[in-house]
Amino acid sequence: MYSDAILFTAMSLNWVLNAVQTPSDASRVLRRRSRYLAARKEIWEHFTTDLRGLAALSSRILSLLGDVENVGQDGLELFGVSRICEKRGEHTRARKLYEKSIASFLPSETDRTARRSLARLAKREGDFDLACELWKDALGNSRHGYEAYEQLAIYYEHKAHDPEHARQVVRQAINELGRANQVGDITPGAYREFKARFDRRMERLERKSRRPLLDVLAM
Image 1 (cartoon, rainbow, N blue to C red):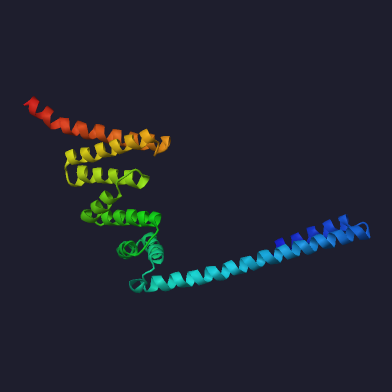
Image 2 (image 1 turned 180 degrees about the horizontal axis):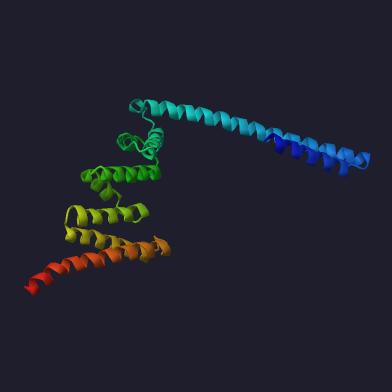
């Protein structure tokens, strides 16, 4: 750091010596230098203010993480700490905090993110009653909604061993996509992405449903 500062100072001095040939040149250089230093001072003041704010925020986060069970009722604060706990692998803590944040007031987009994260943790822990409840509440014409359709279909196919129910969910998703595409409520790229995913899943489920019939005919 110090070597960079020395190099910068040397370059500045060399520029000054080359630029100053007359008194008017000197005056111009001094004005420029004054403006430059004023700007540098303002930047430094903003920087130190940001550092103080960051230090205060870090202190608050460490305080919350040290006493997670007694975190207050601020929804956004609860959500933020739950995200940190999840990233740290503290899934049980994260799940409790997501539930508390959802019970508090959250902006709509943050609420959707919290519910998606809570469903993911519930699935990880094998709590499919809660996961399915959250997925069903999320169904609709949005990325979160189509991902919820997909997760429900996966659950019915692989966990509940109910491929017919999985087919019904996939059919609902395809119908929702069709309606959204018809009225222009989904971008072409998103429509193609999800349509391809649900078409592939439907084809596989239909192959599965035909297999028992083929086994009976082969007897």
